[in-house]
Length: 281
Image (cartoon, rainbow, N blue to C red; front, side):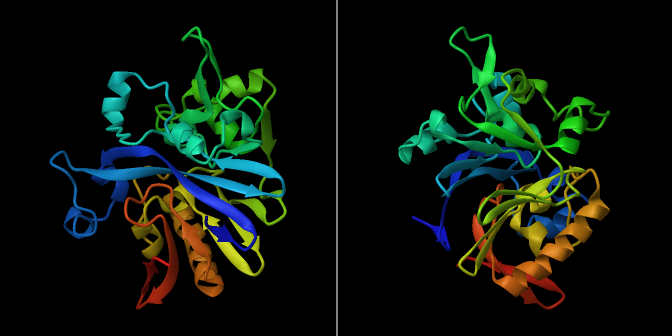
């Protein structure tokens, strides 16, 4: 099993979704990005849904919850969702972990593909309840506010059923910026994709890891500072955020963990000319 120092981690795949290539690469011309990630006949590119599981300090911590199990057939078709060997709950079961075993759920942000698994249908198939009954759900306060009051651009991805039930059951914890979780694990604000997007920083026994989430949606976004998605609400902020963490990653030799990249789940960043290159350790 993989470790960063003394901290056990697993990337659990909730499935694969197909997303518009133009949205994924923003202003980058298709003739450039399609050489790196060829699209299908509908101009879609594959996104993995890799959730992070940490076991340390007597706690079982889950970061992001994928698309969940409440999608209608039409919604699953829109996302192009594929689950050939099950979703997040099945992957947890492979590790002999049940939803009741999760102590903390951290949402990097509240877009539907990162928190859709926060909640599930109760036995009546109508009531929506938290998927992880004993967990405290950690969300940045500003992200919570933006999700409650979305604008014309963001309302389609902030879906209240993914997060409002957490407040009703008293399982919600709102954070104010960088926050320690347990020894060696903390949330860090990585503004750009959303105003309060957060990533997960791991440090143990001189080794480092960073779960970037949508600070760098795909590995190519972390190799090229200027490459941002069309989904980033603050693209210039995202560029500056990435720049800081790119140099940190090179200096520390950290394991960089990607939530959506279909080819690189964990990589190490090295300088390459004017840009960077990720290699699989």
